[in-house]
Image (cartoon, rainbow, N blue to C red; front, side):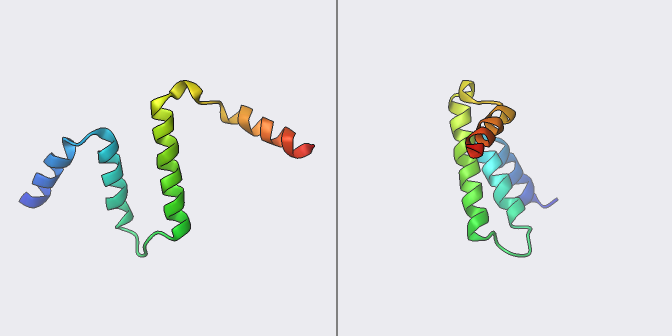
Length: 77
């Protein structure tokens, strides 16, 4: 491993967890042959938004099975 990579790794380890996660996603995304589509970018932003909301108040989270049951009930009307 080059000295630069080792230095960058040490710096990245000092970042807050959310920043490390975002950096990791960006670096891994750069390994793809093609850039993310506009729709994929939108989903990434939405997932990050939802994660931030959950981190602020995890007590508001609801089981997926319950939410899906409510949606199915609503669609059956």
